[in-house]
Image 1 (cartoon, rainbow, N blue to C red):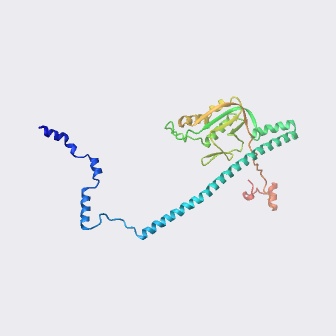
Image 2 (cartoon, rainbow, N blue to C red):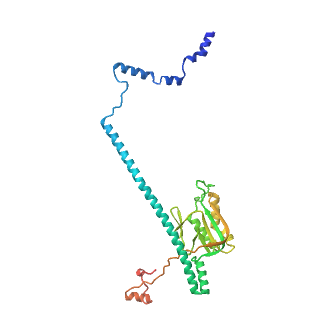
Image 3 (tube, rainbow, N blue to C red):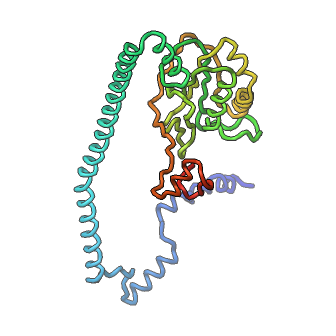
Length: 304
């Protein structure tokens, strides 16, 4: 191979531009350029333009007007919505403050009634009344006991095992089981997040909320119980304790049982008691039936 041929092969690339340079230098395909040249020779326009007619202009103007009106109306109503929202928030806060004040006043009046009643009853009768109120949940109690704490698993955490043990949130049935087993372990007084339980208390759910006596409670949940010293040992062997420990191990839910000294549980609200009343009939036969003579009363007589 001669030196001239070698130099031509080594320097041949210097005479042809690279692809990017050629692309930016001649972005139009040669075929398009030829077609444009032929149209120019025939006197045709190089490119058919988009003709804007009066109808198109009217439609564009109408749409722009509608968008402008909608925007101005939205911006004009925004202060009103914000003001209404802030007004509702202020009303909610005001109602909450009024409720707290009424609750505080009710507690003060209840204590005053208790003092007046004890002063009127005397020593032995007042002590008996206090014992009855403590056992029924209508009086504030204080003593040593056990606190069972339950909390939902952290949000987004997956179950730690594949066992089907239910959700990783505390259910109302969990609180029911804990309260029932604490009663069975010898508890004398129980409260859930400060809500005192009585013989007529209910623990249920409403949507995603848990209600104790129709009052919502939120996690973490603390079930406080006052009772004998052996209450914790008895509860540790109960069904709810074993179940909740298994659930906590599998789902990440928090479950803890600890002893607590000098617990104070508040009194429950005054219950609405209902008393049975005999069905009174205006007919003589009804009077005979109530007095015991004649046949037994029919089910439609109104008695329960």
